[in-house]
Length: 242
Ligand code: SAM
Image (tube, rainbow, N blue to C red; front, side, top):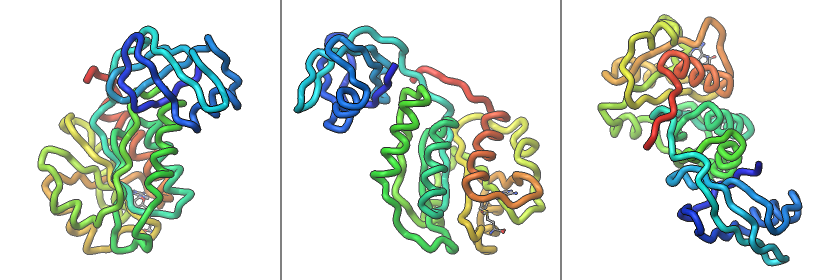
Protein backbone atom coordinates (compact mmCIF):
# COMPACT_ATOMS: atom_id res chain seq x y z
CA UNK A 1 0.00 0.00 0.00
CA UNK A 2 1.17 3.56 -0.69
CA UNK A 3 2.80 5.21 2.34
CA UNK A 4 2.93 8.98 2.70
CA UNK A 5 4.66 11.24 5.19
CA UNK A 6 2.41 14.13 6.20
CA UNK A 7 2.89 16.96 8.72
CA UNK A 8 -0.66 16.65 10.13
CA UNK A 9 -1.56 15.16 13.52
CA UNK A 10 -2.91 11.63 13.01
CA UNK A 11 -5.89 10.27 14.96
CA UNK A 12 -9.03 8.33 14.03
CA UNK A 13 -11.42 10.55 12.07
CA UNK A 14 -8.89 13.36 11.47
CA UNK A 15 -9.00 15.03 8.05
CA UNK A 16 -5.74 15.21 6.07
CA UNK A 17 -5.10 17.32 2.97
CA UNK A 18 -2.05 15.99 1.12
CA UNK A 19 0.24 18.54 -0.56
CA UNK A 20 -0.43 19.32 -4.25
CA UNK A 21 2.49 17.03 -5.27
CA UNK A 22 1.20 14.19 -3.10
CA UNK A 23 -2.35 14.66 -4.44
CA UNK A 24 -1.05 14.57 -8.02
CA UNK A 25 0.87 11.40 -7.23
CA UNK A 26 -2.13 9.71 -5.59
CA UNK A 27 -4.78 10.69 -8.11
CA UNK A 28 -3.02 11.32 -11.45
CA UNK A 29 -0.13 8.84 -11.19
CA UNK A 30 -1.43 6.03 -8.96
CA UNK A 31 -5.06 6.53 -10.09
CA UNK A 32 -6.54 6.22 -6.61
CA UNK A 33 -10.27 6.90 -6.43
CA UNK A 34 -12.67 7.76 -3.63
CA UNK A 35 -12.62 4.86 -1.18
CA UNK A 36 -8.98 3.90 -1.90
CA UNK A 37 -6.73 3.47 1.12
CA UNK A 38 -3.20 4.65 1.88
CA UNK A 39 -0.93 4.58 4.93
CA UNK A 40 0.13 7.82 6.64
CA UNK A 41 2.88 8.62 9.15
CA UNK A 42 4.20 11.88 10.58
CA UNK A 43 7.17 10.92 12.76
CA UNK A 44 5.13 11.31 15.99
CA UNK A 45 1.89 9.34 15.98
CA UNK A 46 2.81 5.98 14.38
CA UNK A 47 1.26 4.73 11.14
CA UNK A 48 -2.43 5.04 10.23
CA UNK A 49 -4.72 3.82 7.47
CA UNK A 50 -6.54 6.61 5.63
CA UNK A 51 -9.25 6.69 2.96
CA UNK A 52 -9.58 9.04 -0.01
CA UNK A 53 -12.86 10.92 0.59
CA UNK A 54 -12.57 13.64 -2.02
CA UNK A 55 -10.61 13.81 -5.28
CA UNK A 56 -10.80 16.50 -7.92
CA UNK A 57 -8.54 18.62 -10.12
CA UNK A 58 -7.58 20.83 -7.16
CA UNK A 59 -6.33 17.94 -5.01
CA UNK A 60 -7.65 15.32 -2.67
CA UNK A 61 -8.68 14.87 0.93
CA UNK A 62 -8.27 11.87 3.20
CA UNK A 63 -9.89 10.76 6.42
CA UNK A 64 -7.76 8.87 8.93
CA UNK A 65 -9.04 5.41 9.99
CA UNK A 66 -7.35 2.97 12.36
CA UNK A 67 -3.77 2.91 13.60
CA UNK A 68 -1.72 0.18 11.91
CA UNK A 69 1.53 0.56 13.92
CA UNK A 70 2.35 2.48 17.11
CA UNK A 71 5.27 4.93 17.04
CA UNK A 72 8.71 3.28 17.24
CA UNK A 73 12.20 4.53 16.49
CA UNK A 74 15.50 2.92 15.64
CA UNK A 75 18.71 3.42 17.62
CA UNK A 76 19.96 6.94 18.38
CA UNK A 77 22.56 6.89 15.59
CA UNK A 78 23.54 9.97 13.59
CA UNK A 79 25.54 10.03 10.38
CA UNK A 80 28.00 12.93 10.15
CA UNK A 81 29.25 13.19 6.61
CA UNK A 82 31.50 15.66 4.83
CA UNK A 83 30.08 17.40 1.78
CA UNK A 84 30.88 15.30 -1.27
CA UNK A 85 29.72 15.49 -4.89
CA UNK A 86 25.97 15.91 -5.27
CA UNK A 87 25.16 12.45 -6.67
CA UNK A 88 27.15 10.67 -3.97
CA UNK A 89 25.67 12.84 -1.23
CA UNK A 90 22.18 12.00 -2.44
CA UNK A 91 23.03 8.28 -2.40
CA UNK A 92 24.44 8.64 1.12
CA UNK A 93 21.25 10.31 2.37
CA UNK A 94 18.99 7.68 0.78
CA UNK A 95 21.05 4.75 2.11
CA UNK A 96 21.46 6.28 5.58
CA UNK A 97 17.66 6.53 5.85
CA UNK A 98 17.27 2.92 4.73
CA UNK A 99 19.91 1.81 7.23
CA UNK A 100 18.20 3.54 10.14
CA UNK A 101 20.26 6.70 10.83
CA UNK A 102 18.17 9.03 12.96
CA UNK A 103 19.77 12.28 11.78
CA UNK A 104 22.16 13.23 8.96
CA UNK A 105 24.55 16.09 9.69
CA UNK A 106 26.59 17.62 6.88
CA UNK A 107 30.05 18.98 7.66
CA UNK A 108 32.65 21.11 5.93
CA UNK A 109 36.15 19.83 6.48
CA UNK A 110 39.45 21.35 5.33
CA UNK A 111 39.38 19.30 2.15
CA UNK A 112 35.76 19.83 1.17
CA UNK A 113 35.45 22.41 -1.56
CA UNK A 114 31.71 22.95 -1.32
CA UNK A 115 30.06 24.95 1.42
CA UNK A 116 26.40 24.35 0.65
CA UNK A 117 23.99 21.59 -0.18
CA UNK A 118 20.42 21.63 -1.40
CA UNK A 119 18.82 20.73 1.93
CA UNK A 120 15.30 20.82 0.44
CA UNK A 121 16.21 18.21 -2.15
CA UNK A 122 18.05 16.06 0.41
CA UNK A 123 15.00 16.26 2.70
CA UNK A 124 12.78 15.15 -0.20
CA UNK A 125 15.12 12.18 -0.84
CA UNK A 126 15.05 11.30 2.88
CA UNK A 127 11.24 11.49 2.91
CA UNK A 128 10.88 9.23 -0.13
CA UNK A 129 13.33 6.72 1.35
CA UNK A 130 11.42 6.70 4.66
CA UNK A 131 8.13 6.17 2.82
CA UNK A 132 9.40 3.21 0.85
CA UNK A 133 11.41 1.61 3.63
CA UNK A 134 8.59 1.46 6.17
CA UNK A 135 10.10 3.90 8.66
CA UNK A 136 7.79 5.89 10.90
CA UNK A 137 10.06 8.95 11.01
CA UNK A 138 11.99 11.00 8.46
CA UNK A 139 15.56 11.73 9.56
CA UNK A 140 16.42 15.41 9.76
CA UNK A 141 19.12 16.54 7.28
CA UNK A 142 21.06 19.26 9.10
CA UNK A 143 22.65 22.10 7.06
CA UNK A 144 26.47 22.02 6.74
CA UNK A 145 28.62 23.30 9.56
CA UNK A 146 32.37 23.38 10.04
CA UNK A 147 33.82 20.17 11.50
CA UNK A 148 35.83 22.11 14.11
CA UNK A 149 32.72 23.92 15.30
CA UNK A 150 30.73 20.69 15.42
CA UNK A 151 33.43 19.07 17.56
CA UNK A 152 33.66 22.14 19.86
CA UNK A 153 29.97 21.75 20.74
CA UNK A 154 29.84 17.94 20.72
CA UNK A 155 27.63 16.51 23.52
CA UNK A 156 29.73 14.49 25.98
CA UNK A 157 27.25 11.59 26.08
CA UNK A 158 27.31 10.86 22.32
CA UNK A 159 30.14 8.66 21.06
CA UNK A 160 31.63 9.31 17.62
CA UNK A 161 32.85 6.44 15.43
CA UNK A 162 35.54 8.14 13.33
CA UNK A 163 36.11 6.21 10.08
CA UNK A 164 39.83 6.79 9.76
CA UNK A 165 41.28 5.85 6.39
CA UNK A 166 44.81 6.62 7.64
CA UNK A 167 45.01 3.09 9.11
CA UNK A 168 46.72 1.93 12.32
CA UNK A 169 43.36 1.74 14.11
CA UNK A 170 41.27 -1.35 14.94
CA UNK A 171 38.69 -2.79 12.54
CA UNK A 172 35.27 -1.27 13.25
CA UNK A 173 33.61 -4.49 14.44
CA UNK A 174 36.40 -5.20 16.94
CA UNK A 175 36.43 -1.59 18.15
CA UNK A 176 32.68 -1.65 18.82
CA UNK A 177 32.50 -5.04 20.51
CA UNK A 178 31.46 -4.44 24.13
CA UNK A 179 31.10 -0.68 23.56
CA UNK A 180 28.46 1.33 25.41
CA UNK A 181 24.97 1.53 23.95
CA UNK A 182 23.42 4.98 24.00
CA UNK A 183 23.74 7.80 21.51
CA UNK A 184 26.33 7.39 18.76
CA UNK A 185 27.35 9.03 15.49
CA UNK A 186 29.39 7.80 12.54
CA UNK A 187 31.82 10.22 10.84
CA UNK A 188 32.75 9.91 7.16
CA UNK A 189 35.25 12.23 5.46
CA UNK A 190 35.30 13.88 2.03
CA UNK A 191 36.70 12.57 -1.27
CA UNK A 192 40.15 13.94 -0.33
CA UNK A 193 40.05 12.38 3.13
CA UNK A 194 40.72 14.18 6.42
CA UNK A 195 43.55 16.67 6.74
CA UNK A 196 46.30 15.25 9.09
CA UNK A 197 45.52 17.90 11.74
CA UNK A 198 41.84 16.99 11.68
CA UNK A 199 42.74 13.31 12.06
CA UNK A 200 45.04 14.12 14.99
CA UNK A 201 42.39 16.18 16.76
CA UNK A 202 39.73 13.52 16.23
CA UNK A 203 41.90 10.66 17.53
CA UNK A 204 42.64 12.61 20.75
CA UNK A 205 39.03 13.44 21.65
CA UNK A 206 37.60 11.46 24.60
CA UNK A 207 34.28 10.70 22.87
CA UNK A 208 35.89 9.39 19.66
CA UNK A 209 36.38 5.74 18.69
CA UNK A 210 38.67 5.57 15.64
CA UNK A 211 38.00 2.63 13.36
CA UNK A 212 39.12 1.08 10.10
CA UNK A 213 36.68 -0.18 7.48
CA UNK A 214 39.29 -2.52 6.02
CA UNK A 215 42.51 -2.39 4.01
CA UNK A 216 41.00 -0.68 0.94
CA UNK A 217 40.12 2.99 0.56
CA UNK A 218 36.37 3.20 0.05
CA UNK A 219 34.46 5.97 -1.66
CA UNK A 220 32.54 8.11 0.83
CA UNK A 221 29.18 6.57 -0.17
CA UNK A 222 30.48 3.00 0.18
CA UNK A 223 32.16 3.94 3.47
CA UNK A 224 28.92 5.41 4.87
CA UNK A 225 26.93 2.27 3.99
CA UNK A 226 29.62 -0.07 5.37
CA UNK A 227 30.07 1.95 8.57
CA UNK A 228 26.34 2.14 9.36
CA UNK A 229 25.94 -1.58 8.64
CA UNK A 230 28.86 -2.55 10.87
CA UNK A 231 27.58 -0.27 13.66
CA UNK A 232 24.12 -1.88 13.45
CA UNK A 233 25.66 -5.38 13.42
CA UNK A 234 27.75 -4.66 16.51
CA UNK A 235 25.36 -2.52 18.54
CA UNK A 236 21.95 -3.83 17.46
CA UNK A 237 19.22 -2.40 15.26
CA UNK A 238 16.17 -2.43 17.54
CA UNK A 239 12.95 -0.51 17.22
CA UNK A 240 11.73 0.90 20.51
CA UNK A 241 8.64 2.89 21.49
CA UNK A 242 9.24 6.60 21.87
N1 SAM B 1 41.40 10.36 -0.47
C1 SAM B 1 41.46 9.61 0.72
C2 SAM B 1 42.68 8.73 0.71
O1 SAM B 1 43.03 8.27 -0.37
O2 SAM B 1 43.21 8.46 1.78
C3 SAM B 1 40.22 8.72 0.82
C4 SAM B 1 39.02 9.36 1.36
S1 SAM B 1 37.63 8.27 1.28
C5 SAM B 1 37.20 8.46 -0.38
C6 SAM B 1 36.34 9.12 2.09
C7 SAM B 1 36.11 8.75 3.54
O3 SAM B 1 35.63 7.43 3.65
C8 SAM B 1 37.31 8.80 4.44
O4 SAM B 1 37.62 10.10 4.91
C9 SAM B 1 36.89 7.89 5.60
O5 SAM B 1 36.07 8.55 6.53
C10 SAM B 1 36.08 6.83 4.88
N2 SAM B 1 36.90 5.67 4.53
C11 SAM B 1 37.17 5.19 3.28
N3 SAM B 1 37.88 4.06 3.35
C12 SAM B 1 38.06 3.80 4.67
C13 SAM B 1 38.70 2.75 5.38
N4 SAM B 1 39.31 1.74 4.77
N5 SAM B 1 38.67 2.80 6.74
C14 SAM B 1 38.06 3.81 7.40
N6 SAM B 1 37.44 4.83 6.76
C15 SAM B 1 37.43 4.81 5.42
